[in-house]
Length: 167
Image 1 (cartoon, rainbow, N blue to C red):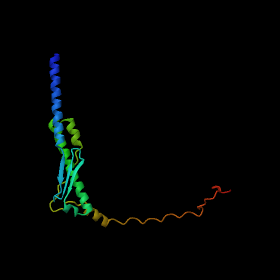
Image 2: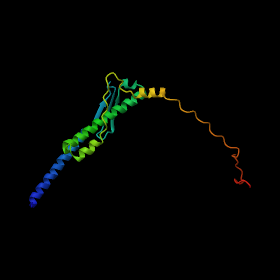
Image 3: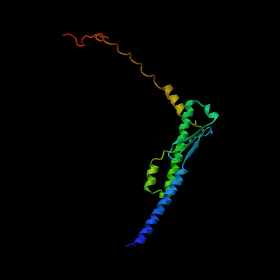
């Protein structure tokens, strides 16, 4: 059986360990922001450790891109930055709790999937091209039916008479 002094010493050691882990997590999370740039360097996105957008930088060349291409690139780069921040958060918890811990497992379970690497010679953003190809080969939408005409029984009678017909 432990003496009260031994119990208190063990308890204080556990408290000190928990405080050290909390400080390590706090420091790691403070540095876990993410940033990513486009291949041509015209777009840079920065995010906080929770994935919230903290910065967006566009060069003059980026502003010359078509709006659809620009928005698609911004979203793709934001996803890369968010994944980078999420990986840093997971690494913080791995360093403190270990990769076998339940905390690490839960955090890594929700990591965004990694982006596929661009193939050499392939367009960097094929979404718009694929959409245009599908739109060009898609069948035309069906013809709309004309609205039905009101039957002859319906009229715009706003008189004070009864709505029920005499039988």
